[in-house]
Picture 1 (spheres, rainbow, N blue to C red):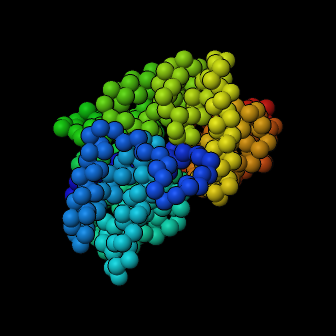
Picture 2: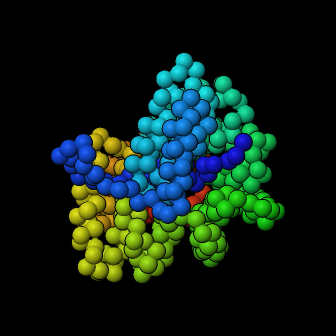
Picture 3: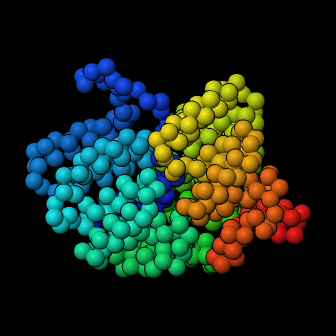
Length: 392
């Protein structure tokens, strides 16, 4: 089976897919509200796939191909409307008495994009009960469980991939999980060796592995290695919003604000990317910062009006680092931590706690998780040392 949706892509869908917008009511059914920014060959491919679906309405394969491509474009363009198109195309096949395992897995991915993790896991369990050797279902399940901080369960979902997929795919999944559960150094070495031994690797898999290595190096405090792997990943000519966001975070930590503006200056559709750009613009006192602050304020307000809580981590970061409001930032970071428990989620919670003057006792759930998971991250250690005046 062709591997089509990488672990890093899945994480991007969970973390960086939202694009805020003010509600608008068209005056008629014929009015074109906006043309989606599909690019050249991609749009031609979408047109072709749509025609295939129309010509074969009773065949599942054309629909699966179309839905997968929509999801890939939604990630690449940072535009959640593609996920809406995917959902609409998939809907008829979900009404069957026995939807296929592939259909259930795609539905799970769309639930995941809205951070409806329980529903996503339910669909994945149904898919795997029907087709236990479905690699994509195992990979999606591993991604969700790692985001939730359920590392043992995530690892158990990665292990089947060692037999079901290309070697590098299984190695990235396994070592990504090991790296956040007390085995960072060993996971880093193992993945670097697997990367070197891999031949004829698909571009998306190569970029995924390089990005994962860069993130591991950052957590180890090896910023030179992180820069190397990020640069290698960026040289893979394949747009990847997750990579842009994580590399922008690296640059922000290094106070390379001009580089962030150069990297993200044209990427203002995704809230997560616009946030990182705005932080850099503020640091450089650029005149564009003010308009971007207003845009993010409106976008986060619109998300709350929709009842969308999937970007609380980014909003907490916006409140803390852009608006300088530590108490509201802490409240959002705590709400985000209840859903997502990745290193970035721990970091914004600790940053907000330090800025708010909170003590160890008030952060006990986070501190307990860090102790139990044995999460290693040099950046977190700096923050932990500031809790209670260096007695963390």
